[in-house]
Image 1 (cartoon, rainbow, N blue to C red):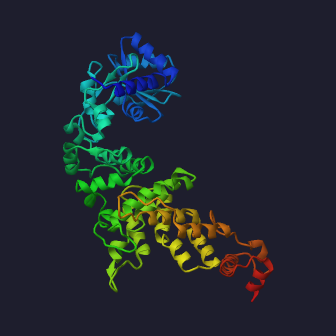
Image 2: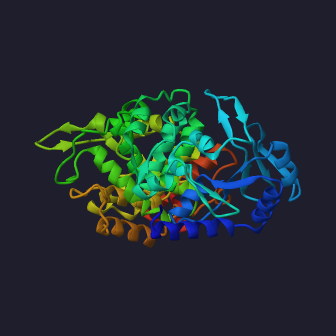
Image 3: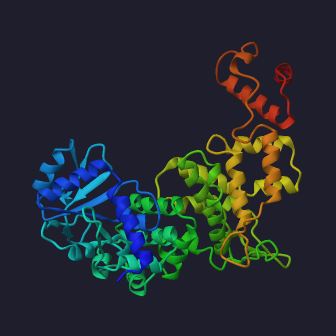
Length: 468
């Protein structure tokens, strides 16, 4: 029997699902009239119980054939067969999947058997996790939960309804990884054992990328999924570049938190708090991946020198390592180029403030970062780097960083926060100096370098410089 709190939660969730869309309600009534039963299943139900908004809906239809379901859906608009072989249909303009219960055989192209008479208890056993196997009857509001997924959700446990069926789909290891981060839940022993032994060599890079992006963009603590991979002894074979950070030492006075792995995990979580500076989803991913990768060069450069640990050249060394890591999970060139640029220059903000760098140095940095990224982004990576130094907890530090604030203020004063200083001269200005051709470009680059280095903003002064 459910507690009062759970009953209230169920009533709230049922009402939220039943009132989500008048069109869905009309389809549910039509299916009911034809003798079918509709259950809301999967992520929408789970998220409702977690107090999250619904963005789309998965509906599983029982006691109707696929043909009968098609005939009903056609009454409400054009149908798209997003997965007809899997019994999945959509009505245009409605973010709802309508599917029939099914069984899946093993393999990358599993044979699917639709079964309108299957019970929900049998159907839900093919789902990856019990928290994704909770159903709500959209007519009655009744909870249908044969795998006790709601109890697991309240307890914060990730468990498989059927560990044999779970292991048949190796992508699910990466799904567990991102669920650990997103919901900050612990994995039960049987599921840990299955994931530790799972062969994931056949999983495509594109599908791994989807799970990584979900973990990064939908988590308050994306580090938890990476920590979990290490806890089941999978980090070393899946992402050796991250595994190499473990036990790589750091100066205790700079990094009281411990080794480079602990620092990188804290910094990654700190970067989540910087996402408000990003203007696009791509920028968010660039910031998160750059922060994760910023110290990948330390394992190969760390040495004991003058009674302390030092990592000379680690930023530059990290570029090749970051490229290797990123290519395991994405082909996205804009993401990779930006991350590598941020990794190479992530030390600049602190160095500039400590060394009282000139205006020209700031402007030259903006040039180096452009056009793939900006001073705004490198400041956020550097802030996360400094926040990942908590020796009292695995959570990052939350206080403001004066050095990064000073760096940001200087860049904003110079007008290079978002992009480099524009060149004063254009090709038209040089038509009297030389004929059209490659030499124009050479002169423009020379003039721009002089402009940045010496702070010259006068057109005539730059032309005079070029004539010398």
